[in-house]
Image 1 (tube, rainbow, N blue to C red):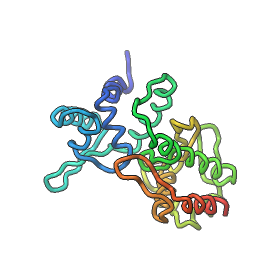
Image 2: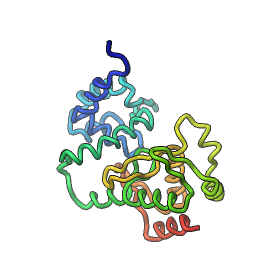
Image 3: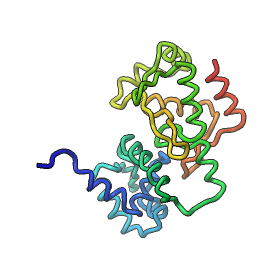
Image 4: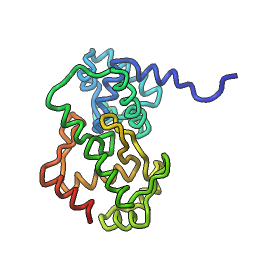
Length: 226
């Protein structure tokens, strides 16, 4: 007797090219309308609405209403984690998007992975936190050290409040472009908020790019070296 979750339904939805394009558009974080998602997927509004209904039914996207408008976003961080986890497999198998250009290096340098920082810069941040023993990694398990808790508290990051949330505080997330880990979980989200609130970087509208200014990168480096 076969028991346990049936991944085929979710896998089929993610595997549909139109649905995959819409889910990837939502990885940037902001909620989008069905019309905007239809444009991202290159399909009609009616077709997009049908796909979105199935994605919502499977718990992959959630719907919020504001006046006459309906906005869609990823249902929760677990969906983003699953999508990010599939990216290295797709890249390894040679299934790459054909759209190329100047944004590709920017995406590889620093981008959002739903609500936390990803890309080359994020991997460097993770490595620095581990090297300084602010984070302790044992296999796939990751935790803050005493020194790390003091470091984050000094930056105004309330670890107790983060730990009270449903999500894990720290989580290793395999970066699709670097093939190494960056930091996810509520602490990873708090670190991205820390960067954005200090205007070291800004999110580029309608993309996943997190654009650091030269001064912002220097400030990040200085902060991680304290």
